[in-house]
Length: 194
Image (tube, rainbow, N blue to C red):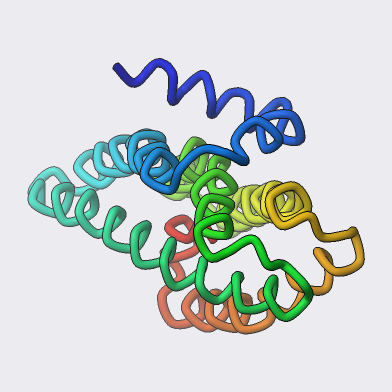
């Protein structure tokens, strides 16, 4: 049942240019299902990590699971609309649906690997380990930006310069928000997948 979605995820990880070309005609419903299903990886593993970290508060695991999906869906729509504004300003006229598909497919590294920094944080014994956690989050973030880049170029038919400009301007408030939240709530660095 889920196998085709995970095969698609593998393609987004190893051959994003080709799979974006093939997904141009997919519908928004399919890409949303993809995001929800592939997001199960991090949702389930971080939930287990939360329960292992604090067994007496097993309910925290359910809260973590639900919270992950609320953040995923809200981020999908708000991030997608925000990205689309800049894509549109820089010439992308293929519609909001295409940008939302880019957000759903482009989040693949986070859906599959964001749990790693939660695991590292669980066994953190020093500040060095916390730095590694942040580094993992940054690698996932940059990887996703690369997928967004390929998605914008492919789905909206923008050139390199316009795609790069749209992403840079999209990122400014996103980075400010993430940095602000990581200062206020340090554990959020493992939760964000832009």
